[in-house]
Length: 362
Ligand code: PEP
Ligand code: MN
Image 1 (spheres, protein in one colour):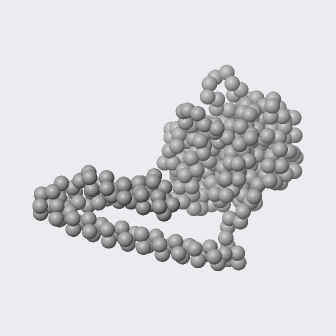
Image 2 (cartoon, protein in one colour):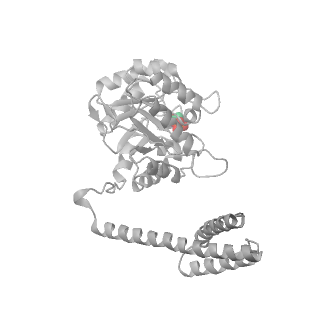
Image 3 (tube, protein in one colour):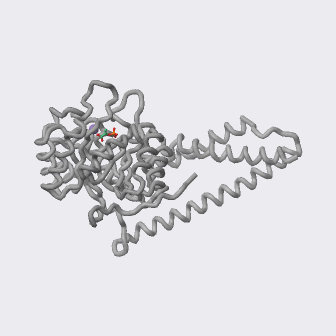
């Protein structure tokens, strides 16, 4: 089921948020000094949006759960002193009420909240009729529909300034990442909703600062629309997520070292070669589909033959031969066995479906 999202550019106080959408700030607001100092450094770097958690969803009780509403005036003060837009996480209607009362410009929905449709619906209902951008993190589990569902709930409530944040997915077992990126999921989200900006949160994907640069570069290479990164004036003493935070100075160094490739190939810049290659790919894909269609016609003829002569559909020896022969050919041509096997299995399954239909005709 693919519905459309009505997405508008994020315009705040008459200013349109340009891509790349850059957001930075500490995991949590901890002290007035930390918020103001970090914020000024972020603003000096030209990053337009400051993030800070006020209420922190902690996996287990006893960890730092954020200071709550007492920290909101610090964000208001930072907003007055700089041009920064302020973003903060909300997970219930009380959070929204407090955040809006203190001039928070952008609300973000945390991964644990996105995973809960009841909570998302309550937030969407509460926000109905309000004009505020909502950034929606992916749910903790790798479920693209749950992510889309949350975006739809806000959209149905009339919120059109939506941005998706990819922060990786929970898993059990060893990995270098805190949350596995599973890039295929945000790529699919972009494919289905090309007008929806999708930005990357490398901090919560990595969980460690030494991995940040690689993930940021990958996000840029994949043409995502911005970065949402934690930074703190004193990461070692941060009250939450200290291993993944970097100082604003380190952040600047890292951002400067990234290669920002040209992503939007527009009018003047259209690369002739690229266009030619794409035409070639279109032609080859066309040929592949037509060849498969021709193959299916033969499959149907075989189906008829099997029906007339009382032969079973699946003949294991024949299938084993096909798999062996084709994967060997593939290997010779530089195609991995895994890849060729996946394609053959899909074709084979479709062939069985076609022949089953023929067998069940009478
Ligand atoms: C955060 O951004 O600090 C946060 C809690 O993130 P997530 O919801 O992605 O875990
Ligand atoms: Mn965090």
